[in-house]
Image (cartoon, rainbow, N blue to C red; front, side, top):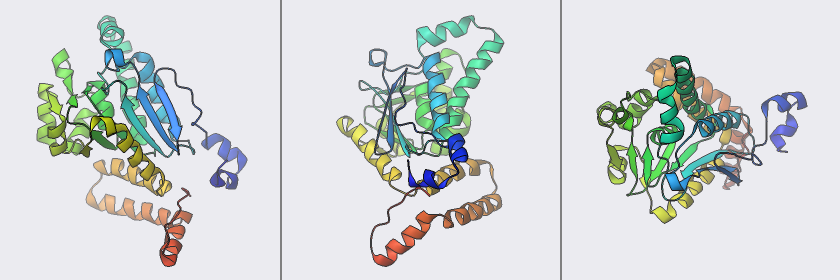
Length: 286
């Protein structure tokens, strides 16, 4: 048990701290090393599509990450040279055609809740994107905090190509913040694929990597996040999300309060004393 947990009242810790390194995933792969979790969508023969079950498990897992103290950063990737081809045509799209409105709304709310839990968990999420990244796969990439891609990656918000609106799983809210309103409009109206080099120019990808180095670079970046002041990083993620709906004055006040809270942490004190001693601070997330 971590030093932080030992300082908590046991009853408080029991309801607000949990260990997820040993989690056993059913519908994807899950591995934790050095407090970095790697989620691997693992249906390579179909380019890693999502199913009703994998949507629900991902939603619930990211919700649990809010309480995890043994995972401080997350990598999401796909197996077999592709990221995710979206909702499975046979296991999701086919059944949706036969459902009534209440069940359809149940599904669309579930998919939106996956994005909601990804944005709400305090851990930075790094998406490692190679090959096909389409539909809901593009949304999972979009909902991540940082995206690393390859020159051969193809990202497509292809909802309009199946007769649906581009306003799926928060795309009309989040995507314009990443690449701008005009570029987001083009992708959502056409459903065309965004190539890797174009995606880097547009700011969708933070950088491009060689396919064989992609996962290593994503995990290295996640480890860098995990070794930082994780409580403060969680505050940064929260403010990046919440300030989309704030005026500048509201943001300035919210950041003043958030920073004052971070100044009360032991990590802040450790950083000061390490600077004075000319050593590197060892952050512990408290």
